[in-house]
Length: 191
Picture (cartoon, rainbow, N blue to C red):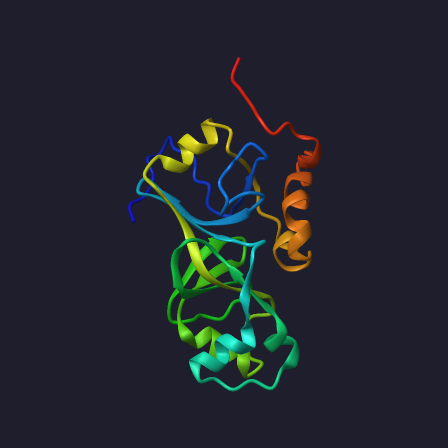
């Protein structure tokens, strides 16, 4: 991906929160961590949609054994409609993995198998979210959707990512800048 135009704003390491006016069945009430954003578009992982899988089931499909019952019971996220067969691990820590993208502020996105194997051995990152699939936007698409009042963009907060239950992340992410989405109109307009 190319480097962004020097006058463009980079939305990487921000949370993209679906406003009540967004009438998309997939993204309704979603919170997406923007992992990469440049002139070619944006890529992120939805952080508040559980899939039908657990980490234990994914590890079993990978042929990786794990004795950590807490890790095995962790829900896998439905990270987005793009590449639903691929795994994406959002994590902290300072260890290098085979295919890792730095999101910012000590947060990373890894797509290689080695991070899951390390997690199964108890040697993985301190905090991690496992997702299947990601979300993507073409060049200028996210910027247009923000202009159209479909989304609210807020700085990322790792407590929202790693500490809150999934059901609380949508309201908490918006609340981090003082907005109560439950009281937000389900429509918007421009004056």
